[in-house]
Image (cartoon, rainbow, N blue to C red):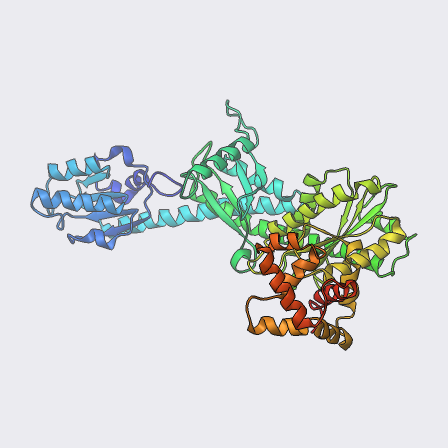
Amino acid sequence: MESQDGITVRRALELPGLRAGLPEVVAGADRLDRTVRWVHAGEVPNIASLLKGGELLLTTGLGLGTRPAEQRAFVRTLAERGIAALVVELGRRFDRLPAPLVETAGAAGLPLVQLHREVPFVTVTEEVHTEIVNGHYALLRRAEEVHRRCTEALLDGGGIPRVLRILAGFAANPVFLETAEGRLLYAAAPEAGPAPAPAADPLQVWEGLRGQRATRAAGPPAGTVLVDVPGGGHGSGAVRARLVLPAVSAPLLPVHRMAAERAAGLLAVVLMQARQEEEVAARGRGDFLTDLAEGRIRAEDAPAQARVLGFRPGDGPLLPVVMRLAPELSPSGNWALLARAVLEELSSSVGGGVPALLGVRPVEGRVPLLLGLRSESDRTAVADRVARALRAGVERAGLERPGVRPPVVVVGVPGNWAAASAGLRHAAETATAAQGLTDLPWYDARRLDIDLLLWRLRDHPDLAAFVDRAIGPLRAHDRTARPALLPTLEVFLAHAGRKAETARELHLNRQTLYNRLARIEELLGTDLDDPQTVLALSLALRARRHAP
């Protein structure tokens, strides 16, 4: 209840209504800068239960009790309730306030005032309430002035940093804009003024705040103002960012929170517009890459159009890459955040020496990229880093969910602009065909041609018939009997028929593996040592992911 913008106990005592009562402060003279939230008058012993805190309580003392213990309890209860001050009018109940009352108020830090003349309590109430209302109006005017300046700064092209500097200057403290997860976006400090000590470096302040967060279990440091910047959505999208105003150089008052709340509304619009513009730009790049892949842009025209989009790869080969998200994530994905996160991850992990053109295709759930290599020998190293950046971007964009398949990253073959067209198309199709395969950091498009061919035949009835002829009896067995035999066959074929390695991976002794393989041969009526049989079974196991 320390002094803030608004009327204080000291100011209330200076108003004509209370001044006419010849007020005398008999306890708590060092607490007169407390803020008076409201005025209340009453004469009942349990009046504390009717109060919320911050009140200036007026009484003639009829409810204070006659015994010292009652008087002490009365004052202690009011102090615990957090009232601003107790004002007792002498004459009707007391000629002078009793010592137990004064001593208890002094010990509790509660301002206690006695009035030597009778005053109309209604007049006191009207005057104090008028001051409170006027004070609130003054706060609103100051906050609105900051809002006006911030609005003008945005209209003049000042952007978010200028808005934060205005707010920091008004609050005389550094101001930070962080993500909902606590990652710093912008920092601003008040402009240098006449104070002899220089303003604190905002980044040093931020590091200190981050260190305190790591050691504090609950909430920000005392006096810090936190204001959410709304995101316009629900759940995790309800908060887009957060304004943080720590009380570093000066205490923060209610007017500073008001100004921050109004600035947050402006920042919400700016961030929403930025996200929309960013998504439009990312979709535009995605459209360009898709048009290139589907032959709607000629190879000779592509470099000029790519330069307009900021892609200048140099004379080295182009590497096509496509990431495909699980279908469950495609409609609801935050594609602007995903594009920004991936580009930032690319910049930090791949480095500025690898130019990248990244787009998004929300309808298909794809993220196509073209990367400029120095030479074809860089393909594997760059693919490793790009795959890590893509997956990290998905995680930062909040597009990882329990039970949902991880994204598929397919890396094509390096080449010129003409080859990039076919490479993007091939990588996009292969990324779709690769869904459901064993999860790898990235897939080489050249090694998935069989899967792509089978995927293209997915609707042909002959494919389903082939799968049923090849492994149908084994699938029927696994639906009703244990142990399941299909996994054994898959591992056996993956190890090219090497029984020792198969047994090791399945954690089986050799005789158990031999028994299972014999049972498979019996069910399928075939010989697992026959190369044609092995080829047919390998194809059937791949095709069953696509056959209905």
